[in-house]
Image 1: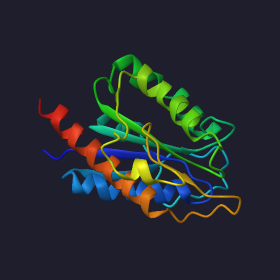
Image 2: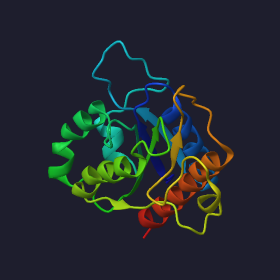
Image 3: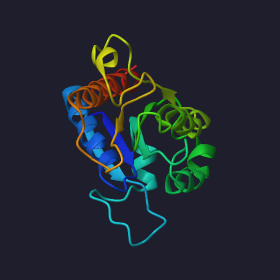
Length: 190
């Protein structure tokens, strides 16, 4: 049975979408299926590049990568509202012992990436998920001049909302996806 990693995100200007797609490449390199889905937007005018997630897809995933842009050191309201709607999954324990990680994008190097990644981890911990990040064995963590932290992949778009990821950001997102896929497979078959 194939391991399925859900890459769940919200993106306004495309940076988080770009990270999600690189993470999906890593998931495939880790020999798992990547399912890219969007968080339902609060603003119905907002369009997403990928389908909107269903609660069934979330409940049945073997691993999760969760992405959101930075808003004042926190995830966007859409992402918070989504997690607030997952009480049924929490009560049933559907996500317990499944690996998960987080990714983000901000407009500046000190825009709150790490604070956002930490705050995004809270609902995952409450759901009983097992968090993973990026270890310092990844050489790009030592070289990045923009995004990338041990807490998870990140991107710094600059003031012009540039969605183009740096080479280091791309490599870190791919390695994160591969690591998440391998952990998901190991835990699923254990």
